[in-house]
Length: 118
Image (tube, helix red, strand yellow):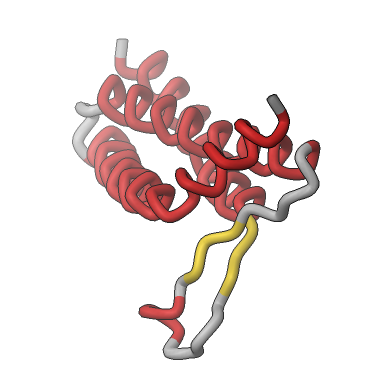
């Protein structure tokens, strides 16, 4: 069973870059909706939903890192396209925290704006 889980995780790691891009899109959406909620008084609901989805993506990355550690692996994503270095590996937990912390802040702002506007 352990070997099957390791094989599945090793096969899924290259596809996690798509989840990073989804997180980036959600982060930009949450930022724009939060800015609209602050400046225009509308969009707090979209900001809250995008932030919640972003939090989910962050939790997925942290959970994958935890499972990897339990299996004796170190799940990482290679960002060589952006840095220009051959191996620019970032662990999943750093990506997960990088999505979860802004999501928490944006959810708090959106929730406060929704209370103020309503």
